[in-house]
Image 1: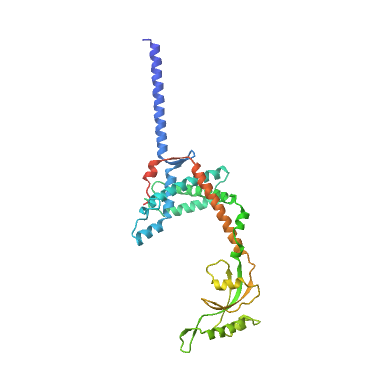
Image 2: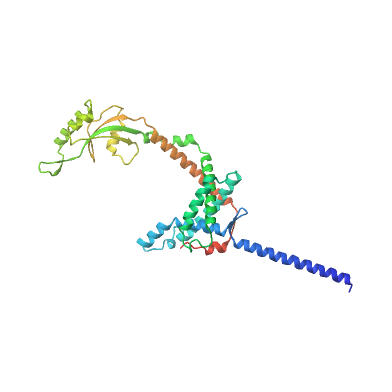
Length: 337
């Protein structure tokens, strides 16, 4: 055998051995990295520590309902079946995973837009993290540190800021939304009134219903007082009468409908006749019906809901488009109880 060939073969063997060892080392490093990753979102890994913080924080929001089911109903909340057949624990775990993914998606979007944590964000996250972490037992905080909590809280602040921007930028047809809100359902009627209960007290101190004659007599007194130059002063001479001012909003179910229907037919400055309701006898004077605050509030709420609906569609679309590589063993072994 040629010595030169023997040496060359040895070199080839050594090279292959080195390559094999490097491959094994890299595989080990990758395996270790995979073991420390809960999920990879669009190529960005989320650590087990971050996932544990998020799960722990989410779980704390269920403490009251879990305690209620345990202490008052004698049931394990996490085992209760949902309408889709999953247990409450499975449903919540699925929601938590989705929220964890989307927090990271929105945080990445915020960073891509140049958003950064402010000094106030840092201070608030540090304070909140300390309060949260120190409230946990050793078992509850297993697998993460206070620094991990702060990092998650900072991510959440950036994600929330991006969500707020997206929500406000949702394209909605404001004219159509406003047109769908009926101004007549939100008219505010400012009025003053005199009232008397439907029962009186007889000479023996007993409560008795008013007779028709007594109702007519009280009604005349109320009308006389309301038509006086100073209705409130006139009513003061009749202790059985109650003077007051109120604002009734059209469309409100908390308002006596008989009273509201009467007021809606009146003009400003007009005094009603005697109105008999389930709450007593009333005479009212309409002071104003031009306040549009309730209507504008209703429009603002309708616009917010329209933007929220549009944002929800965007949220769901982004989630469906997000590529996730999941550490199945971590999520399968994760329990909430």
